[in-house]
Length: 84
Image (cartoon, one colour):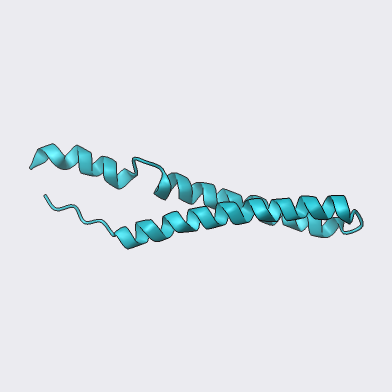
């Protein structure tokens, strides 16, 4: 049985997971810096909180789906290995 896997998409989505998770954490850190350094700019801090949370959640979603081992395609590959 042939199992077709698009390794380029898997690699790309794993990279998206890393970048968005780290980007979200950096935006959250920037929002914390703004709130401590410039308390008058509360709206920017709030915007950074929302944006950082959303980016980190997207990163967690992609990480759980594409970076974690075993991925669903690897489990399927192992399950179908004995059916040849």
